[in-house]
Image (cartoon, rainbow, N blue to C red; front, side, top):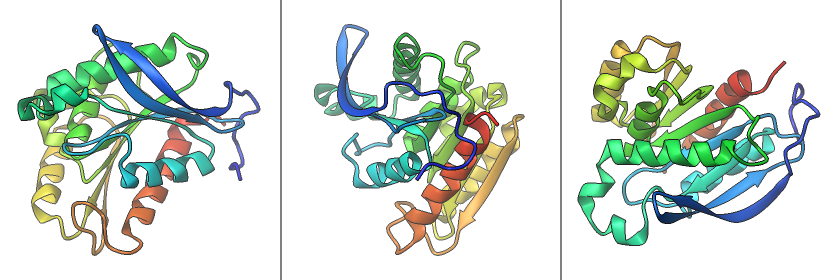
Length: 223
């Protein structure tokens, strides 16, 4: 069921596999747009993950039921992933994320408000990309993320940012606190009790997804 406040405007509702031409390569993704979607959330997964990640697909489903479109896609090709240095090349990942955002804006969903959902290293890439002047990102959510990897780009981020960290993920929690201190945008740090880095404990991923959905609804959906 769509939430109250979702505008009647629609962007070609559907659920499809997409091929995204980027820098002479083709990145694969899945674009899901529910009826009456009020915005689009682009996922940036972490190292060792992909668009098929059960965790990201679960979160995407929660966002879809909340009236938000989602794009799950692979930041790297299969060959690129074989080189571990690419997985931690935050600048490369951010450049891909911006290129995919540009691809979305050039298509039928071009007038949608866009947010980023980043996990682990993907959160660093999302914040790096959002710090670029041309990004025009409306909101960011980081789950178990490494915002510290965005380094000097953090003060340039203007999009409201929600940092979600597991209460038992102590090292990453410290990194998130340090990164938040560097940010100048509106930000909020939420600790999910009992959760470790991957939010595998019962109910913890659901909680993280609900927090993310609330944040995106607040900042992506016009009222």
